[in-house]
Amino acid sequence: MRQRISELDKRLFARMAARRSRPGDAVLPRLSRAANHGRLWMATAAGMAALGGHRSGRAAMRGLGALAIASFTVNTLVKAGVRRQRPTIDEVPLGRRLSRQPRTWSFPSGHAASAAAFATGVALESPRHAAVVAPLAAAVGVSRVHVGVHYPGDVLAGWLLGAGAAVLTLRWWPRRPVVPPEIRHVAAAPALAEGNGLFVVVNAAAGASPVSLPGPGPAERIARLLPGAEVTEVGPADDGGPDLAEALDRAARRAAETGGALGVCGGDGTVNAAAERAAERGVPLAVFPGGTLNHFAGDLAVHTTEETVAAVEEGTAIRVDLALARPLTGATDDGGPRTGRAGNPPEPAEGDDTPRETDGHGADYPFVNTFSIGMYPELVAERERLERRLGKWPAAVISLFRVLRTSEPLDIRINGRPHRVWLLFAGNGRYLPDGFAPVHRQAMDEGLLDVRTIDGDTPLARTRLLGAALLGTMSRSRVYTAARLRRLELSGLEGVGTLARDGETAPAPAALVVEKRPGALVVYRPIG
Image (tube, rainbow, N blue to C red; front, side, top):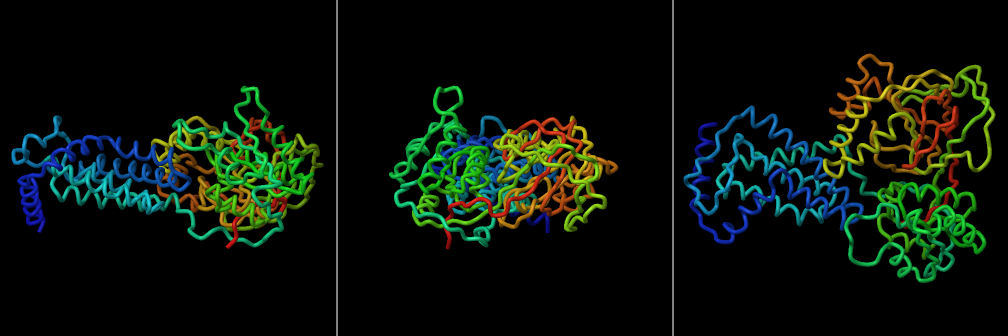
């Protein structure tokens, strides 16, 4: 059977080599060269990320992640295992041939695998973008037969392996649900026709694109869609313009005085600062997608400026939780409930001696998304540095490996119990998927913290952690623990150095409590 398939493959190759096509001869060799080393797909991903929206960026990252998996599998494992010779190039017209012939084995086609991986990865996130990318990917595969460096069977196998690699990314990086997050607490908010009574602060320094894009910027776009709104644009701190904190303070104060609302456009840190002020003043918050990352808007299922505009004018809003990390004074080593393993609620510890909490605005650390200590801030920074080139999940695994090489576990107390951990993560609401790289939330008003730790005391902890990350089995690993809590107390943090919340860092106090303020924030969001 194998011999018969090989003979059929050779006959198909000879037939394609004998065909003459002026357009194909002009285009396909150039396309084949453009796809060398994945350059065509990296350029396509960069264009999608720069010119497209939130979904386009996710599609580009998944495509690059799938490409990395497919390229490694094909070029490192499969080719060496099969060791099929390249076709005899004598049958191919001289004008079609590549100036440099490949020296690797023929089966399967690495170009076809990378093309199919990228196209399928894009399709999993955005079928609309895949409709453009898929024909290009198919043409790259055909080009490899046209220039005489692969049999048709090599290309077909490459396509299948590439598509499989893209589907495999779902194991580590589940797609965001198509259905919007669950809405359990609809809130009353003023309907602001044309934005009258809305005070918007746009952080122009948040996530500025390296590519100069045509069309209006975020501030101009919001002002055009909501002509009655007062829009303030804040630039870099050294440009002599208004300070972000001052602009947010003023906008929140004006919103409270007029019975209006506070609006914000920026990254996670900017949205966090606005949410804190909106909750303090008791005014609704309108979040316009923008910035380098805006997880809060994504979890609200608000992906475009037009969606926020519609909610503001219609007065549709929901209540969501705000989380808070508060430094403690007089902290002891035996207080609060202890943490539990994944799925097991923690039990109260005996002999609680709850320390007195500090107050004062400047000492608190509110957050709308995530809080962390340990190597998590460094892990996120390294992952984000790599993911534009490699895709989210290959970048996550590589960054974990790099950070683990130099990091040491921290000795801290969690709810009064001694723990040795590499990282502690607390999400404002339950995140999906389980593991060390949470992506999104389906509910934002459950009143619970999503607490995850990576244990540093387990034997062979580094090896187990890396193995679980590669196999996608983190949620079942002995080094990983998780619990859903209403309150979390941390002490013994003198050696921690810094904490991170919503992408911003701050010095860590000796002890703190992390808790929820259920329904403390009213946010505009389309309903229905």
